[in-house]
Image 1 (cartoon, rainbow, N blue to C red):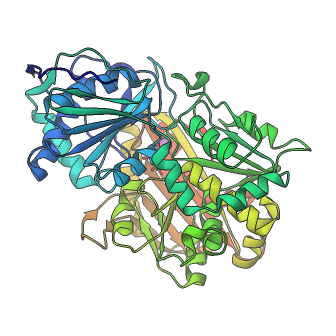
Image 2 (cartoon, helix red, strand yellow):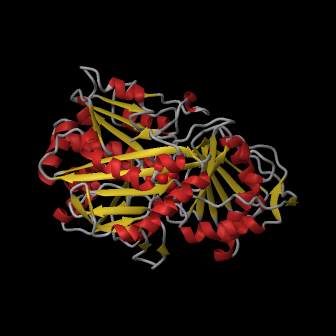
Image 3 (cartoon, protein in one colour):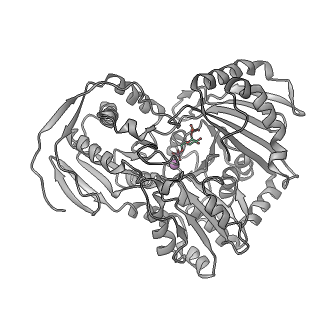
Length: 553
Ligand code: VG1
Ligand code: CO
């Protein structure tokens, strides 16, 4: 690709606002057909540009990165965004080859190439296709998701937009690396793997991991037909010498093979079955559609995300060169289990508790206050980037296994022996009536104040509130981030409505009970009293007509 196209006519297209473009927990997510309506994507992208232009003036010397998880509508959306970026005068646009960039790779590219920001096209772990889901998220200069102040400004713009700017130009070739100039914009199709792989080589001891695989260690990595297939093949099979076939479902597909690319015990059923065999591999792992979530399995053994976060924190300094000098601190979202808190105390570092969503970790990491962070929703990451990072988590576990030469289960058991165990589960009730669900949460909110001091399943309630967070770096206050009931024995019930759904409302109920010594009991049994109380307090059946959760994770 060497052609230099002449300067083009930029046109201004009149449009009217869509009232529903407020970004949620992680960008704007809608049904694909909503995004395919005329002007819908254009309005949102122009609003992003207008909102950030306010801050920096023009885009002439700025770089924008664009890429997605390969789902249906990824490619046409990239062509549309490119036209808008050209018309809005960006100096440079970087696009992942094939239109692909995992969410963590987007973060790596923005940071390493000093870009102004990036647009990630993904609805993460939600299914893809014309009748499924699509999404778009703006990441800022630090490589992380735009904070609430920025997304709110974007939303305000979407409510007032009257026109967007675009150019008429044929589609560019996304499948070959190379460079072209459109009008005054340099457009470069980049290798989507290079920056990310370089970050991983910096952090991990690839020699030690190669040795692990040479010793006969077996891994099965399920890319779930999402974006991580090519990343895992490059890193695990090519650079680390894992046998061919280690990566399964490695080809990114527009419909993820008809499945939910959601790495949990329900949707990664094939991997779970493989890990239950008598001669199962040593480690099983899976990532979601856009590569920021991870599932970790030992032989017939599931590592909860909260335990995984705590164990990575516990072993990082000893097992991973990138953390040799120790951790500055750790952070977890409020509903995430408190397992990591106990490790932080043992390490003598602070532990921050944030609202749900990766955007809240950005300031902490930029200020050097925390190194490792995570969420109960299968997300773990560190300050190497500003996104949660699925393949990184797998490399962390490989490093811990290489250093300890023991099994996944023994590592978790040793952790429980030392720190005790946080029994943790999340119940999701999907597709509830929005009005009923909102009212149900509102009613529980009003009951909270009367609960403090009363007793519940054998313990006393010490805190009952709607979580509110004051960012320790910039002082921003974020309210109404989830109802929580905390008991004197450390147990917790947390309820909140999802901010990523595309249909109806989803209620999430998070249950946690800590036991110092009894660490090998049945989880359902340990949590049953809390589950019972949670559903009773919510009046779930009475208000929403629901008894059974859609998924338990
Ligand atoms: C969910 C998870 C949250 C995660 C978010 C984005 O949000 O609970 O922890 O950060 O998804 O993850 P919500 O509002 O639906 O509970 V991803 O992998 O979808 O970018
Ligand atoms: Co994701």
